[in-house]
Image 1 (cartoon, helix red, strand yellow):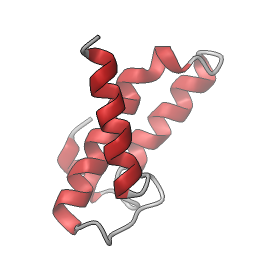
Image 2 (cartoon, helix red, strand yellow):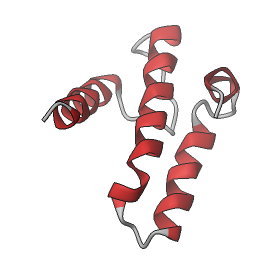
Image 3 (cartoon, one colour):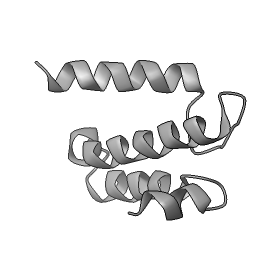
Length: 80
């Protein structure tokens, strides 16, 4: 997944959101098996908000404040 292409998608980051859905379906909705794709979506969403500002929106991404909370939580999980 190339970040530049996923940011340019309509809607932005949509390919990454679809990849999560596909992964969850294939893995019996076991989120742990798809966490790398969730990280990839959050990376795209973070870049989207940095590029377009916190007032921007895309259906593929959580609101900026929730995204930052999720990024922080995931980072804390990885550092345990």
